[in-house]
Each structure stands twice: as C-alpha cells, then as structure tokens.
Image (cartoon, rainbow, N blue to C red; front, top):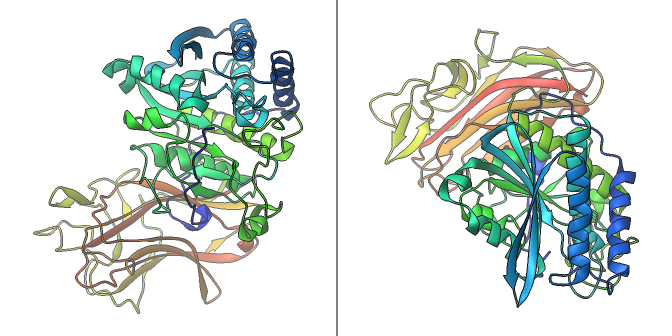
Length: 500
C-alpha cells in the first residue's frame, strides 16, 4: 500500500442504515488459513532469495508473478501477463479469468503483488495477494459456476503510484470498462495489530472523498454482513485513493474492500472494539521487518473468509440473506402493522402501500416501486400534486409490526430501506428502526438526513438482534421531519430475521 495519511474513519457500521445484507446462493467455502500462510511463506522465500524484496523491476517481483501464474494455470484459469513500463523498468500485472459466467457482468477481485524495495512486503501486500490467490484456487476446486464472470488480478508497481492498475484500466475500451460491474480490492488484510475497516462505499461516514460509484454500497454491505455474522464489528475507511481501487472508481466502476490498517495508530476506542494495543496497526509498514512473522493469523483467517463470502455472494446475484429465516414480512399481504397513535406528523405518515413515484428538480424523492413485489412501508404512498404534497411533514411518524417471538441463537435483522431528502433537510430529520421489548424501544438502525439532495435508492441493511433472543418483540419503523419545511421521504421493505 502506498504511503498516504489515513483520513479519519467514523461510525460503527452496525449502527448505520447503510449496512446492507448480501445475496448468497451457494455457501461460500471456509478458506484454510494454513493454505494462505503457505503462499505467504513462498513470497517470503522469493524475497529472501532475491535481495530481500519483491519490488517493481526487481527479480523478486517477477518470481512472485510466476509463482501465482503457475498455480492458476494448473487450476484452469486463463491467465494474461500484462506488461507496462515505469521508471525505466518493466512491470507486470497478472490477470486470471475463470471460464464461464456473463462476461458483460464481470466481478473483478484484485490486490497489488509488489513490495517496497526496503522489505519483502508480506503484510503489504503479500497478505491480500495470498488471500485472493487461495480464494481463486477454491473457485477452481469447487468448480464454482456463478452467474457473473470472475476475473482475478495481481497488480504491479502499486507502491510507486498505482502504476499497474492504472495501466490496466487505461488499456480498456469503454465497452470493456462497462463490462466490469464491480471491483473488490484487498490490500493489507493481516496487520499484526489489526482493525477491521471497510471502504465506505455509501459515504455513511460523511468523511473525505464521498461515496463510490453506484454499487459500491452493495459491496460494502456484503462485506459488513459477513463480519456481522461472525460477531466482528467494522468501521468505515474513506476512498482516499491510496490503493488500486482508485483507477476503477475514477472510471465509474463500483468498488469496495477490506483494510486492517497501516502506519496509523490504533486508538483506545479501537482497542476496546477489536483488542490489541494503542500502537501502530502495522509497526513494520514499508520496513524490512514486514516478514512472515508480521501477520496476525486471526485477521488473515477472518479476512480470507470474507473475501470468499463476498465473491460467492456477489457473483451469483440472488437475494436470500445468509442464515435460516425465523421471521419475514415482504409486506405483500397485510400482517397487522399499526401506525403510532401518538405520532406528531401532520402529513405523509407511514403506511403499508403501493408507492407512487415522485421527484423534485430532478431528484427522485419517492420510488415508484417497492424493493420487492408491490407493497412497502412508505411515508405517504400516493404522489399528490407535487413532490412535497404527501411527503413527511411536521414531526414523527411510526409504524409497528405485530408481535414476533424470537428463538435463541445469533439473530440478524435484514431489510431494504431508503431515506430521501432535498437540501432543505437537516441532521434532525431521520429514519430509524427500533426494537420494542416490553414497553421500551431501542434503536438498532438509524440514518440521519443532511442539508443536501439525496435521491431515493433502495439499499439493504442488517442489525444484530441477538440480545433479544428468546424474547417476544415488535419492530418499529420511525421517521422524522424535525427540520423547518424539510422535504423528507422514507421507506422500508423486505424484512427478514435470520438465525445463524
């Protein structure tokens, strides 16, 4: 990973509505961490035999490419070794296509294979390279045949300014770029004092560069759902341009990925969250000590499994949440949701309805379709004479589910949602999902508005309900127009509680 200052990260993903539930058709394999470590040992041996590094233009880098290519060729991939020149030296990208799938809908998975000249680069980025490699080999071993075409990539000269990934993206025609419908980047997934950061595809942190291209939120939410399923909290990290996703998002290709931290220092709050110490995430970042001993095996194991989960989930394009459903409501039939008797909103209150499309000055404020089927929980379903005619006005609106009896186990709420608003909204306007146990509601998901135009887009979200296992609860959806004359619309659909 190139050296750049880390831009601040904010917001526990599990408390923001922009955490989504992925699709999963076939169960993703468990990636044996011993296999990933074996690849790292090979990268270490290559560096040791070639001057202590695997840097651009050095023999250790080409030997690393050859090692990866030989394994992929034997596994049935179609590989291409793309060359480029930088600083007077020849660099190489390795591209590996898995036969089958829709090539006009290609999911690409990549990370850089080069190290800096000062060390072997086993965490940066042998870890991501090895994780991606083992996932690719598992694709072959299981003969995975997803709907989407799969393409894996190992980039050269990332440490010198993303030179390999830029050369690749620049070599593509407009049609070839359009065929890549998602890019997953894995750069440093085994830091010795790890954090669990996900690229902030939907900009729910509101930090730095803004959201990624449309589809980036789905990638983030897919990865977030995996970590939720194993009880590991995550935080967002900005698309700050410091790794190989940069050329892809610049070309409008949705992207996402995992990052365990580099030269930054883990805060005391992050130690409380993930363990470790208030020291650098990787004290050997870009140093000679970034060797095979500079890896946290637990982080490497979790993140390699997360790569597989994302590949299997995103490549098959189905919509079933992971886990066993224990309760669901797609809202296609009336199941007894009740509006709040004490609500203060004067118009546009929540109802189960067939939403009509509305927009204002080119901004879609209410979608004319549910996330699935016909019906959703929506603020003011009918269109009215203008976008503001049936939007939420004047206060709070709630709608509450019938009673839900939960079993024991690890429980996850999955749902689709949007909160749309114009630039007359404020941070006091919001959409929340709450759990009512007894008479006390507790917020499990929340999204605040802002003084900006935000179009309605169905997004998926998850929340951990394990604290309510064995209890009878109700779900309550709540939205507020608390600003002055804000134009606010909200909707929720496809609610499912799963047990894993």
